[in-house]
Length: 230
Image (cartoon, rainbow, N blue to C red; front, side, top):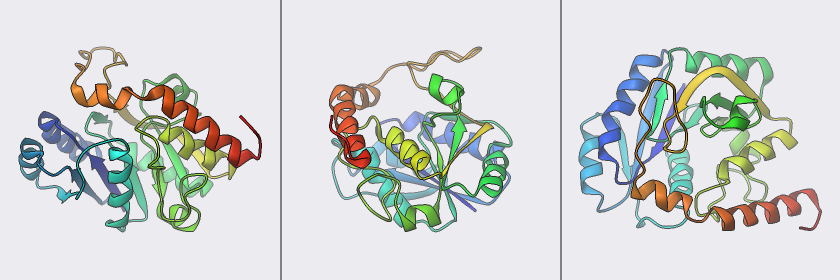
């Protein structure tokens, strides 16, 4: 019922804990698909050891890598709901039931999970790792300008993609938030009580490097969507 799509890059140590957390916390039928870069040998071995599905993309890592992996992963899966996951997540039991309950209650195309970290997420106004309804993405797409079948805009280096997805859904009255769906984001910038802070690594540094440019692109795309000027 839920496809869990997870782009990965150079963090082989995260594969098994992620899969173990998903299996422990999830009760509805699901699939896990790791989207792996070519030549990322240790990552591939770690993903293979989990028995999850694996897809090796054709391109080398670079700007937009994660978005491209999520978008491709979306096209090769088929369940009615898709979690846009990452390898630094920790799941609490009932996360899936809470999402599906909100989806049924509201009919929304984008349902936010609670990462217990980002301030906007804690207010129910954002989601770092949302669930999307396949019929919504197939009909209008997740972005403002890229059309049906596209989940995330690939023009961003890495940041602001979820902001566009969420705000586009809000403008279309397709947004809902599942406060009790705990999908904890163990990112280095967020402390989590009772848990050691995740160490910074090169993958995080690359993802965070172009935040200013990504923010400017977001404002430009938002202005176009609203018919205003920057």
